Image (cartoon, rainbow, N blue to C red; front, side, top):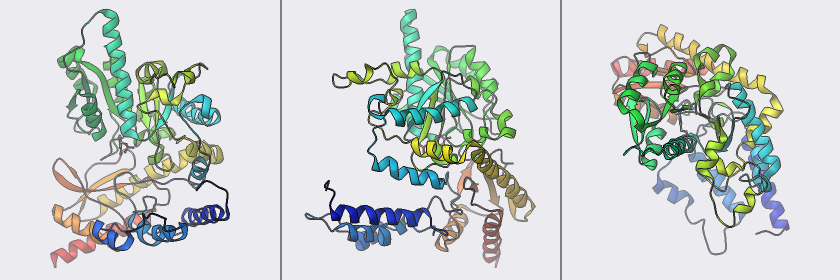
Length: 460
Ligand SMILES: Cc1ncc(COP(=O)(O)O)c(C=O)c1O
């Protein structure tokens, strides 16, 4: 398995050939999921005592397994949050794998950590954080949010300990009821309570509501989470107002910008993010709107020392890693062994430059506005809310959840697009999440056309 043999050469060549074809495929199919039963018929029996060989295993992958994995980088993939990695980032991901880089410590991965830190420093500067801000790339927004909240609670506990104050019976994190499900998940892992505040009519969490929650829950609150781009609507909370409310009270401000904080790279959008520069921690996922492959979340702390105190693991065999005095990425989050998952973004940024990023993100915002106008102008469709970033939510007048489901299934069967229904205040809605610069206005209009046809069919 490890020798450099003829077989090893053939395996590496064929896998690189496959990767080349997939990365440079012009019109990728969307593909279709399949049931476990049918996959068992198509692809079972691959794990044997003596192996089936790379050729057969790759054939199984290419012909039976891969076609059941949706292409999240297809221009018509518009559900959840799509992924649209740049060609440079995809290509470099192969290098990260081929090089067995350990990204957890400076001792083992100095150059990789240095390059990742260059990206973290650039993002921190864009977000207005101080020069000594620092962070790490973790697996995704869920782990990023969890790690930030763990650090925040640790700060609150230490503050209480230093002042000789008891900790509250239950710790509380305050956020919008529209905040991402990963906040509730983090709270469950941490065994703390979440106070989810109903946002204003504009969908934003406002400072006055946060202040009321802080008054009500007092010393129990150790952190407030503001969302910079909600998943369902792409709405940015009133981060500036929330920062005022929070800082008067020594409470940690975390900004969850897993999807939407990338929008701050677009100059005209900056005012909407006012207050991010005052956050104690922020996250943004490169695998969402920063065009990197799965999986990566940039987690940045205003003061990384707080994270080090909360997260550093201690063991006899690990202590040598701390001896050099360098910050080890492992010590900044809930993790130990880590892939240098920030490197594909580093390579892509270094290759294309930051302006390409700004314009690719700006394209998504402009397209969302344009298609929102188109939706508003089409009879039978109603725009639920003007998009702030690149998520457009609308409804088909008179449709039930079953109508949306049937239409969505047909759309995928025809390999046209992947648009699953979402819901808003209990009502089913449709949602375009636009991330991919290859998604065109014409493609979106052609999807709207199918809605008009489906409505006509239903009426007939
Ligand atoms: C606002 C927000 N926060 C957190 C997450 C969780 O990120 P991940 O899926 O990378 O764990 C998401 C995912 O869509 C999100 O949109």
